[in-house]
Length: 533
Image 1 (cartoon, rainbow, N blue to C red):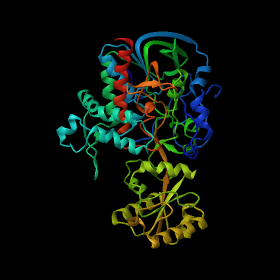
Image 2 (image 1 turned 45 degrees about the vertical axis):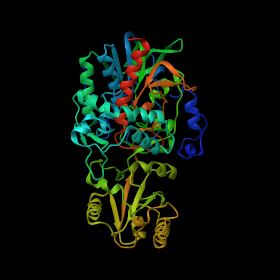
Image 3 (image 1 turned 135 degrees about the vertical axis):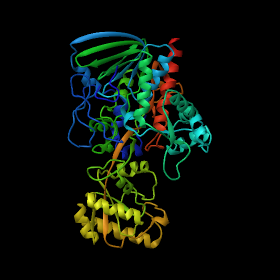
Image 4 (image 1 turned 90 degrees about the vertical axis):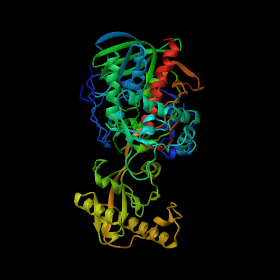
C-alpha cells in the first residue's frame, strides 16, 4: 500500500513573451534539452538528493541561488543497482490526471505503474480546495444547479479567457467531457456541492473533501485494481524504440528502474515549485511565493523533449496574491483585503502598476510580471465600507497593514520611497477628479480620491499555484511533435498538457481539476486503443 497523502518548439519569441520575462530563455528551453545544467496550505518540502531527484528547498519564494536539479543532473548520478519491470502502461505523476489515467486503464485490465517523485501523493491536486468547473453533470442536475449553459458556451469561455491564445479543439474537449468526468468521480465515491459565495456560476462545483479527497478516492480505486504506485521515484528518461515511446527509466534512491511499457503517460505537473525551475521556464516570477508542490520542476517538459515533443512555453502562471510579506493563509479572513477596488496598487518603488477594478485575482499576473517587481502594496484611505475597514484595522493589529496620517508618513511606515509614492497618489487623485483613469482604465465608479486620514498600506505578496504552457496535446491526449503529429505511444494530461487551454492567466477556479480528470481518462483510453488492449 502507498502512503496516501502522508510522508509515505516554441517558434520564435513574441514581444509579449519578452515582457513576461521569457526573452531568449523561451527559445532555448523550447528548442533543446538542458544537458549540462547541473493552497490551502503551503506544500511540504520534497526529500533530499539521493538520486531520486527530489530537492530540499521548499517553494517559499526565497530568492537565494538554488542548484538546478534537472532530470539530466539526476541521471548523471551513478546508480548502484538496476531493476526492470514490464507493464502495459506507465504513468509519471500521481495527481488527478495521472491517477485518473491509472484508474481508467486498470479498470480495463491493464497492468499499470505510477511513478511519484515526491514523498506524498497527489501533487498540486492534493493541495487545492477541489474546485471543479463543468456543465451537464448529473450531480449538478440533482442539486438544481442547471444554469450552466452548453458545452460550446463553456468552450468559448475558456477560449476568451486565453485572449485568443488557445486551441478551440482543446477547449471543447474539456467542456464536452467535464460533466461526464464529474459523474465518474462521483461513481468512485467523490462528492460535490456548489462553490459557496455570491454570484457564483452553476458551473463552479466544489469537492466536499477538497482536492486531496478526490485524489485519495482515485488512489484507493487504483490500488484495488492492482496499480503499483512507486513513491520517491523520479522518471529521468522516456525510452524510445523506433520512434515510439516504449517505457521510462527512473531512479528510486540508488536504484535505477527500466520500466518497459506499451504506452507512457506524462502527468508530472508544472514548473513553479522551485525558483530554479521558474528561472528556466518563467523567469518573470522568480522570487515569488508559491503554493505549488516543491516537486513541480518541469520534469515532464524535459522528458517529452527527449521524445521529440513540441513545447509551448508562454511564461504563464496562475497567480493568487496574498496579504502580508510573510503571507497569511488563503483562508484567513484578512485575505479579503487582496482586492480593494478603490485603492491604488503600487510596487515597492511606489509606482502604480494595475487596474484595481479587476475582479479576478488571476488577472493581476500580467501587470505584476510586467512591473518586474516582487513586492506590492495597496494604498487606501479611511473611506471604506464598514466591514472592509474593520478588516483593515485587524490587519494593522496583525502587522500586515501599515497606517499613518499622511502619505509621506505612510511611505516611511510601509518601507516605500516617499517621493514616488506621494507623486503617485497626487496623480491618481487628479485622475479621480477628472473622472477618467487614462493610465490603467479603472472603472469610473471605483475612482475614489485618497484624501481621508488615516491612510493604510496593505502588504501584498504575489504567489503562484499552477503553470501554463508546456506540452501541446491532441484531442486524444497524444503528445504532439513540432509538426503537430502524435509521438506514438506518448500521452500527457493535466497541467503538463494545458499549453493550448490557458495563456497568461488562469481561466477560472476548477478548470484545472476538470481538465486533469478529462485528459487523464482520455489518455488511458487512447493508450489502450494504441496498443490494442
